[in-house]
Image 1 (cartoon, rainbow, N blue to C red):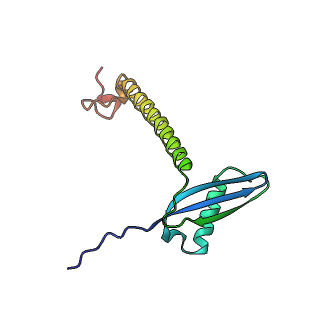
Image 2 (spheres, helix red, strand yellow):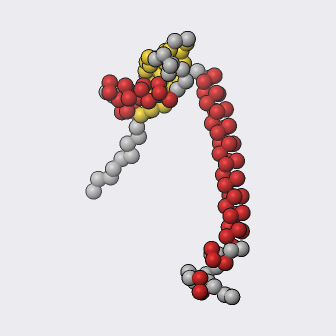
Image 3 (cartoon, rainbow, N blue to C red):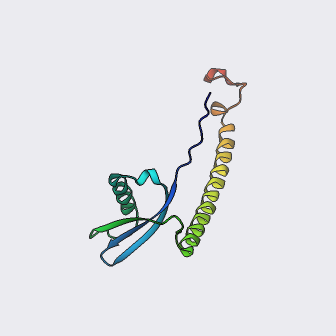
Length: 132
């Protein structure tokens, strides 16, 4: 009996640069190397990122994709910016979740005061099953 080995993807850093009238914008992405093997795959990533990133939508833009060398990493400043951005998003979504939990509890209180919609198992599903 042979066992399957866990095959980990070979992750590489890529740099995306968007050139447009009035400037340029760059970003980095950690991605499975298998997803950028062909020119079509690279083109799809560039198009997707280009459409979703700032700049150039009114007058057009051009995107380049470069693969960083094995020992090369994105600049420390970029990494710190990403950490701050993600921490801010986490804080925001924690607030959204907290508000949703509060709203659900309030909604359940309202439902439980309405006998027809109550989740009380002693009542049936029909109006005539409700106590008078």
